[in-house]
Image (cartoon, rainbow, N blue to C red):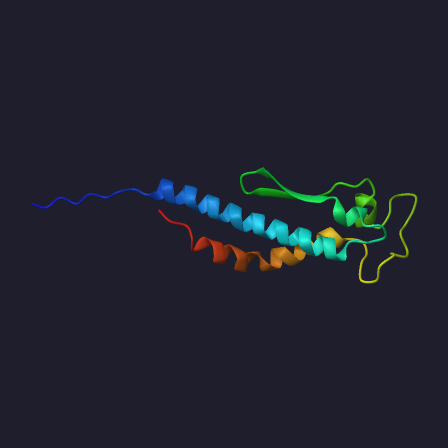
Length: 120
């Protein structure tokens, strides 16, 4: 009588898949930063210059602008003041949100591109 044995490779595949999906999210975060930099208000360059993508945890990445007035520009003002005229045409409030929304729309394609690398 023959004997059949199964080798369970699901744990290895799961680790591989997490690594590949983390790479896909890192790519999406970098693309978000590039798009946000292109549409960020520009006067002297501080807002566009001081930005970074960092990995917070596995499958979590953060795009940050490290300038005091970045939040003010992103929201288009605060409770006391509202930004009415941006210095560069084509820029404005919600530059980071719109860049993130654009990447969310493309995330399915990015995930599919990276998922083929997952191996058991």
